Length: 493
Image (cartoon, rainbow, N blue to C red; front, side, top):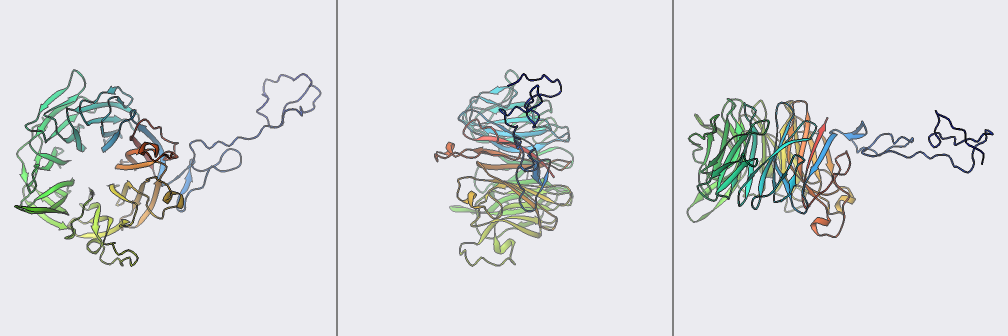
């Protein structure tokens, strides 16, 4: 073979015509280069070689190599070896920062801003991430036993307020050397704490009742709602002063119940409350039923809407829009929330379903959108948010819509995101499968960014002996660390 001519502007291997000898003839011993498709991190679009990286499902379009809506912006995962992380609550501030309350039993949990060592059975961690999803700081709430988060909100001063319950008599908040210890009166009570945007502890207090949820009232103050630990005790709400003192409770007359699922300020004053409520009597089991009400501490109960006499178990979620309409997700009797829906003759057990309900400001059901029937693949762990434009977004666990054969035959558990318009009609829906995943919380920012967090594991972690394809929201398969890991993803429309 003749001597190769050195060319500054042409590098052998980058030109498809091959290399040339001094005589001007092609070097036949070296075959022409073959184009290598580039589909890394792409769901669709050009592969760089005249082909495509994939096709979008019906009703979705391809933009910037991703199918949507919603379109993937970024996705993250966090975890620790062998143990579990479970995000429980998420909230956004006015600057687009993300705060997540995460439960974990890990002794070496690190969100990228310093490792934490578990102080007991199950601790709660508060994590701040910037708008790009990068962790800024993390704080630990822990005692000798369990600490669980119940609610996470941002007050008028920009403080991040965390409310939860504990089985520890002493609870520590903050960083090593700066923690505050709260002494509990018993081994099963509530707590609340507030952190500044920079992560400094503003205050921490114990509560003499078990809180369910928290909200920010019209004046921008923290309000906590809950019941005592005994069946049949009344539900009460307490306003928290700016310096962290809990004021005298205001109780809902005639209410007896187990758990408060939703607690949101009403634009006209007072609060809209979603709870599983029932009737109790000495020696009789307490039957719980979903119930929605509007309550004003000064005026009492304005209206109350029950959802049937059937005793149902499950989880519920709620949001309230600027017009005072409530959007509720949970298990409901078909005959109560959707009386005009024809029964399924092939399913004699189908008497209930998982629904998204719109309840107007007067307490009347405006429409019902069925998410899953009694045979569906849904887990009632969904989260709902109004987007400020009359639409509703839902993030949940299960495969929404008709399942493909490869999903039905697998051990995957998908998560989904969908959008419903103001008339209760589906706008779009996306499913994400590939691992055994749970969706926990959904949030929407002022620029219509959509955030979903939850936990996921592989088949092997569940002992099935199979391996999974991994969880991919459009930015590549998320790294795994331990048994159950946390995911956080941002979408845009």
